[in-house]
Image (tube, rainbow, N blue to C red):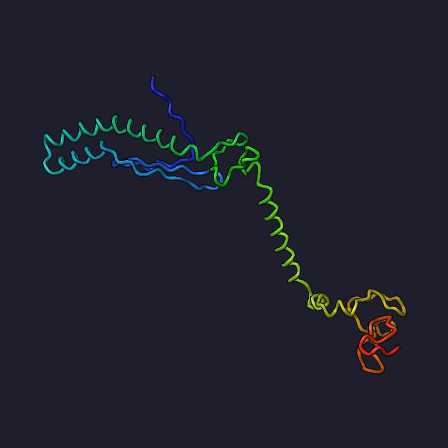
Length: 215
């Protein structure tokens, strides 16, 4: 009874008459590994017989046909052996997820802590960093779409001056960093200066911070 050969769909057979070579790749990221090319002695003999047939024909031609029929069985056996060896060589680099049954690479797509592939159990640290970066990009775009007057209000100078939401005289609402009330005309931002040195006085100051003169 022939031994069964276990295989998966995540491989590519690059074998030719001259030898055997296989590629195995990850179902998630498509990163793969390729086995080194293994020359086939059967393919070399067959090529020699084919060349002899082309040059001389006749008896050697019939010999080439016999060689081809022999190759069909012998080459297939050698191919199966090479395939089995390739799977044994590269299987440790892959693991099958028990949840989705995908074969993924241990290097990039396997969550060791959870025992699942990263498609089923994402790396929380990576997801958090990606989420923060995405949020930052969203905030940048939102800020870039602000009106010019709103961007002016965010400047340091505007915040130091203070921004009122209502008029101190009539309590009318103010739409922006207004200097005068649109309802009663009262001055919103009144700046007091020292009568001695001319320095700007802070709101509620009793003495000048520059020269000490009493306000």
